[in-house]
Image (cartoon, rainbow, N blue to C red; front, side, top):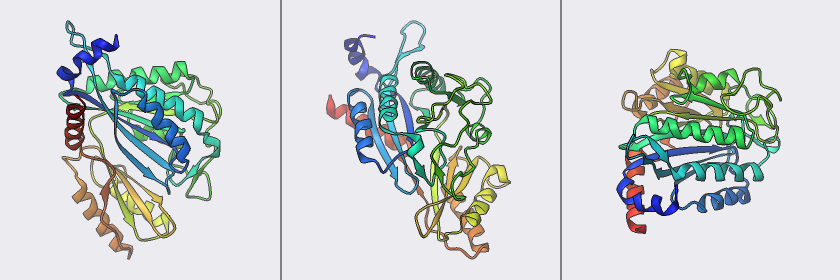
Length: 315
């Protein structure tokens, strides 16, 4: 679509928005992050709304927002600046970062580890699915990196944690608590949804999905014994018989603490307060102190308001 036509529609379509969270396995190499952000800045109609860095995890998450244009006849999505922006950032990642040289306390399957799309404003999940599949095709076919789709973007709705479990995501490969270097077979046992079965060692694979809004809630545990933290995390998670719609895993975080990282799949059903209370109780049984948990990014309402203010100011 011509750039002029897109700009003409920004004002009318600005409330019809999609959000992308892009997780990259690096946070210590500032030159690499700068090159990724410069690549994003070349596409000014998609905005980086938030950047969350964690040096212990050696992982960064960018939250991007932009509009989506629909066909006036069919009302189906036909264009979003997020497609070009995300692809430019992914290409910059692959030029700047090598998975074989990476180590960190957070699991990962690739340098570009996880991309998820969420609806914002008046958008529906179908628009997020449409964009997730476009980006998956770009990465799989143009860049030749294997891509696995999850949840609404997957043909059968396969869950993110199930795909990760199948691929060995939750098994540390260095001293029992760290993920270092190459951690996958060079040829996958199952066909990815896009791209080759041959895995490039420097890049790994990418998991891409579309889902309703998921909130990430981290709770610090005042213990260096990650085995205890993992035991608590299992009891908190739905998979371990804990809280419904909660996923949790225990990770090393720095020299004097560990952390339980939680995905709240339905935060209006099971929210942070309930998760915090459950972790407090379980940690007390182990004789451990717990700090107040925190969200790692804004709520969708805050992101939407921030984006609208930014667009209004620029116009």
